[in-house]
Image (cartoon, rainbow, N blue to C red; front, side):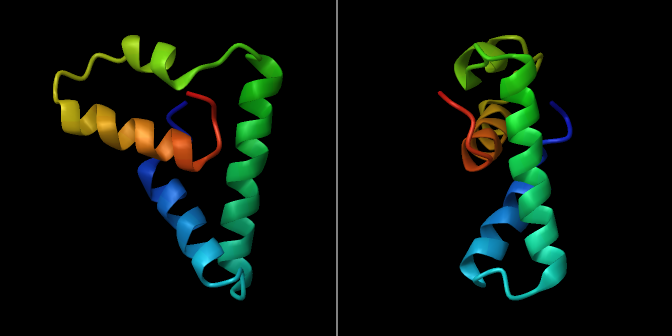
Length: 77
């Protein structure tokens, strides 16, 4: 799950906002989509809420950032 980083999600957001004009951004966005598909293929019952319960972070801001990145990547609540 570490691969779905806040940075990766931000890159995906930027790629969509820019209309995927930049090839590198388009590639990053496609990578995020492929990663999301792979997570759901290997763990079809994956839910953000369940995943967050397994994380050791005590800082709610860190959990909010992780949840936001996972949502942006298209994973289910």
